[in-house]
Structure formats: C-alpha cells, structure tokens
Length: 227
Image (cartoon, one colour):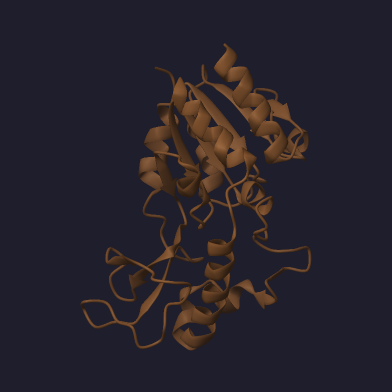
C-alpha cells in the first residue's frame, strides 16, 4: 500500500471559518504575535495570552471539518495516509483522519508551564488561570510558540522520507522549520501542491493546482482513487 503524506497549513482550516495565521496588517486577531505567541509574552502577561487562546479555542470548537478534510479521509480506502499539519485545530481528527501529526501543538489540549511533556485535554473552551498541572505549574495552551523547539519535527522528517506521494495543501511554505520538510521528500516521490497561489510558490517538480482546498483536494483525491 502506497504511503501518502499530506502537509497542511492554515488555508485548509480557513474554509471552515478559522482565520489564517495573521493578516496583511501583521496582526493576529488584533494582537501582535510577539504579545501572544512567545515564551516572553507568557512570562510577562500570562492572563492576556490565556485569554487570546481561549478565544481561539472557542472558535475551533465551533468550526466544522470541510470538504477538503473529509476528502483526505476517503484516501484511506486505498492508501496509507499520514497528515502532518501546521494547524493547532483538531479538524483533521474530527473529519476522521487516522494518523495526524501536529507540528505546532493542539489547542484542545493544555500543557504544564514547566514540563511540556505533561499535556491534558481541555474541558470546554477555556483554560482558567489557577488550574495547575500535577507538578504545580499553571496550565498553558499546548501550542508551540515562536522561539520554542518543535518536538514533532523529527517524526515528521522520517514520515516525509517514507512518502510515495506528497501533497501540500493551503500553506505558503514560509514558516520554518516546517517548510524545510519539502527538502526531505525523495526524488522519486510524486508531489502535488494545492493552493490558490500554488504556481507562484512551487518548483517545476511539483504538480500545481491553483485551487482552494475544498475544490482542489476532492479533485486530487478522486484522481488518486481512480488510479
């Protein structure tokens, strides 16, 4: 059974109503990234950071998987499929994908402020201040912030090296180290790039589909299932 590795970014979740990482004004939900997505921000104002992610978590819980998410699940009928995502939502899991690797964490979980290996499911949409891990530290979002290591990167590299087919969906390939995964794909691997601006970002080696995820992914999945 061939192994399909799918690499997804904010574009696939945007069609479920979740805003992309940041707008043209450099702000993220009205906040500067440095104020809500760094260890320094947490150290200086944990209440603000917690509030920001509580808002985002509520939006994630209200969102639903879209046609792109569900099409990827259909691929599992004939292929081994692993999804590597930069997104911190759980839409792939809720759509039914069996193997999902979250490079940047999962917003529906919390983690210890002193030991990132300690993670817990979040009940509801909020992590309250005053809720502690078993070692007595305040729980924070289970999200990889700027300046923090990406624990899942080694696993993602191994998966990419094992890919027979590699599909990139809804990402500009600008955020490192995640964008570096493109260089781990074997030369013989078939590669596809689905994004409205795919042709501007890809090399000649990649088959580009200049489509939104909800259009391009079902099309490609149909093609692969028919082969």
